[in-house]
Image (cartoon, rainbow, N blue to C red; front, top):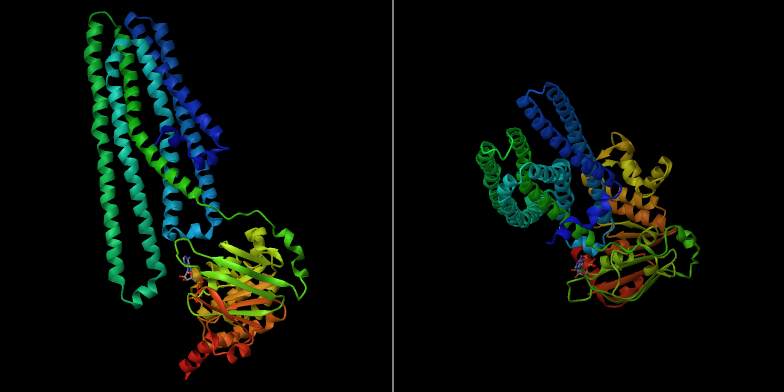
Length: 586
Ligand SMILES: Nc1ncnc2c1ncn2[C@@H]1O[C@H](COP(=O)(O)OP(=O)(O)OP(=O)(O)O)[C@@H](O)[C@H]1O
């Protein structure tokens, strides 16, 4: 890694914009702080000279100067810390915020390329490492190099021969810092990756808890976790070992110059080549110079750790986001003007292949959905039903062919505009922790309470919500904890109805529900059918029997289409599926 790469990561530069004045204040205070220390040394020297020559007035004046320099030095150190922390906190805040914003705009394929826990690790651990660097190390990283350089120049002016003697150590010190720092950045990066895996496994354990118990896989899970924990443990031992190698060098580099100065400086003073007062000031400043110089290896190490974290964040920023150009939500105002004979959704020879897959998930898909129609998509597992929905919601772009929404190519809409016209009820309902009211209101953030209740009534959710202890203000836990699958689904339907989008898409709405809930959803379907265009992906053929059009999919193709009656007249896949269902029931 070049030095340029180290200091110019793009996300850091962008995040630091607007806070650079604090950095400037910190650097200025660091320079002035170093000057204050030198003023103290100068005062000590003049004080010692005055003491030895019995000049009382100069001694008093120097004592006053020295006290003033001590107070100013104290205030400056305080300012460095305050300004550097301010710079760091602001930068870390912007960095986290832009990272989070970037993540919410990621292309679906990019988001799926990493495990969720891995994302969390980058967002929390790496961002935290950078914040820590800014809060605790940046002020030292500003002060110590300036102090080391400033005192070095002053020492040189005092007695260059002594400085040259001490200088023999500096190249050695820099070489050691650089050499010891390189493996640290590599190992801390590896440790961070292991942390990501640990987070992923914790997440698997939490989300898949019930499944893991039902298959008795706790031991497998524990052993797998144990293995990655051990890997992390050994890696952190390696890292600590590498870091601890710096300590003996630090001690050596601290004591060696003192010993050399006292011996050689004393010899120079005895032979009249150096005033004793100058030797006193020299040793005073040498302490500061060494303290600052010896802090550098650890600070450089911390800089490497933070640089590693910034580099990983930069890699995240390189992940592609959705293209948000094109027709906007505001341009959609005329969407309901489509007359009944026109297509609301049309797929024309659409092909799609997932990255890394050798076969097409969708192969020459062509169909039309007209305004107010109820269209069902059925077919065996893996036939491509959900992929159609993913393309429709612009989570993926087709590899060939064209999709149109209200007559306009879907590619011309920005993703938000396209999604604003469709209410999705997914197979797996996701509810946020919070009140039921808030969860339904995600469909239309400015909806009144009355509108929320009306949507809930239409979705058959109002009756059970009213029976809850705090009705619509009942708090629900993470992912809807405290509600049954059917109740969650009805809340999701209420949310979708509240959105008032002209198209409503149900992804297998009945698959996780009992008979009663299924009946309620069927009733909802019948109600909204009059007002909205409905697309349903279903396994339960009972849900779709009265659909205007049923598309039957197999291996990424539409193999049959028609109404239930038309399809039943052929002895094709649909009637076969129906037959299997009946045999399963009997
Ligand atoms: N994110 C993905 N990455 C790679 N391949 C995928 C992805 N999602 C689905 N597929 C593959 O694409 C094909 C179609 O999947 P899709 O989920 O659309 O089928 P489906 O008909 O909805 O299945 P099911 O009824 O089981 O939900 C399958 O072969 C599946 O393995």
